[in-house]
Image 1 (tube, one colour):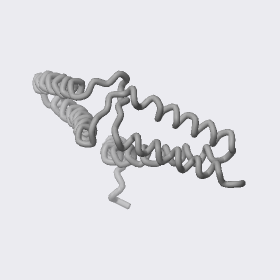
Image 2 (cartoon, rainbow, N blue to C red; image 1 turned 90 degrees about the horizontal axis):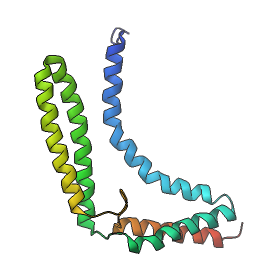
Image 3 (tube, one colour; image 1 turned 30 degrees about the horizontal axis):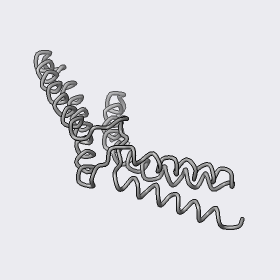
Length: 160
């Protein structure tokens, strides 16, 4: 058992790297399973099932008023948002390292990062005009809502 680190800084580093590595897969897993869990939870009673169907139909009815994007635009938008998140993580790591080495290097990196993040946010903002943050009509979102409504309505028709 000599390989187990005894100091807290090593453990903090290990857990921070582990958190950075697991951040994206856990986020994807949560986004995939949340609608399914909500549908399963709604299936516990008829009233909860009807309320979930009504909520999804309300969302589906609200979709024509949202700006519509194509599959390619949706993919570009999601990838640019992912690039911005990765840029923030890289900046945090680089800024921490360079601040320890030299304050001037850390300051230069902070200015460069500020300019890059402003440019990326400008491109994302100009790409699609969204009335509400993160709400735009992607074809995949519309299909997901329609499939959820169909699945819940089939459960509603089944006798208990």
